[in-house]
Amino acid sequence: MSPTVFMIIMSSLATGTIITLSSHHWLLACIGLEINTMAMIPIISSTHNPRSTEAATKYFLTQAAASATILFSSMTNAWHSGTWDITNTSFTPSHTLLTMALAMKLGLAPAHFWLPEVLQGSTMITALIVTTWQKLAPMALIYLTVNNLSTTVLILTGLLSTMVGGWGGLNQTQTRKIMAYSSIAHLGWMITISSVMTNILVISLIMYLVMTTAAFCLLIFSKSKTIQDTMTTWPLSPMLTPMMMLTLLSLAGMPPLTGFMPKWLIMKELVTQNLIPTAVIMMLSALLSLFFYLRLAYSMTLTLSPNSAQTKLKWRLKPNFTTPLMMAASMASILLLPMTPLMLL
Image 1 (tube, rainbow, N blue to C red):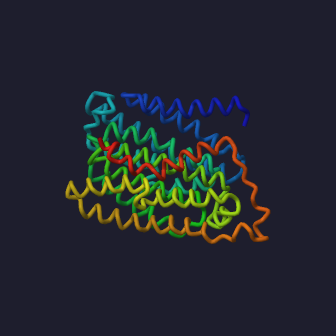
Image 2: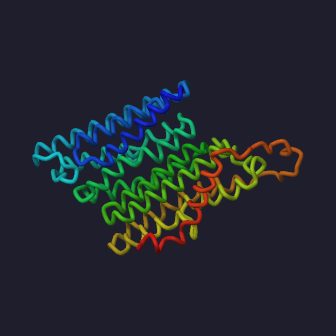
Image 3: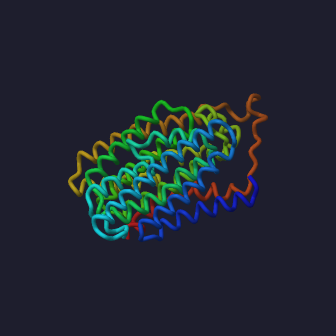
């Protein structure tokens, strides 16, 4: 891909998200989502192989169906209420359709089947973009319309997503599919709390973006596409191994790491709102997610000593310009928990 084409595509990707984030009219929001989708398709299919073409096709069909559903729900709402304002979605069938369409956009259960397949057919950098940047526009629409959305649908979708994200990642050996189910589980937590307290939704989204970016940067740096590849992390870079293990445990929500903070706040708020069965189911689902994070972290310890003859020639990773960014994201994903009181203020 030429630098000019690359700059146009990346500018379109950023422009589509910014248009959706800053719009108060449904047509402008739909235009931003479509620009975002059209810019993402050549990024997914840029490697020119059958898997990437299949992934791009699945992504296009899913996102186009979700965008059409959003446009249809906004049209029915405008027909009923006479306004195209995003914050005024008062027609019940309209906001139910909108909730399911945004769930499909985000990859939430039961409309989650496209996300693991798209990530598996993409490169690691493309998977990073799909699981981080591409979540901003739909989450912004949920943030703007959450007062009019069905609380029951949001909580059921969130519960189902946390369970699917936990069960689905148990038998996976590909790191991209593991990160896909991790994304489904984390977004389930965010959707569940969105109808209760939007401030915790924003904090959870920021923490998710930081931790997922750090995890993908470390996987990209170590070229780990499968669990078996992570076993060579120590001979490739000794400093990378403990940092990746702590980042994965933070993503799993292990105290006292950063990932524990949003889960702790969500659990506290759900119990305060007397949603104790919901909180218990989500905690049990988090244990399932914790298992495959621990399995991924444990595989990094099953390595030979770097002084042995088998691994003496594997010291080949050199620092480059991405190393400071990777280090900063990793440290932020590990050490932000002491800032919790400041964030709550």
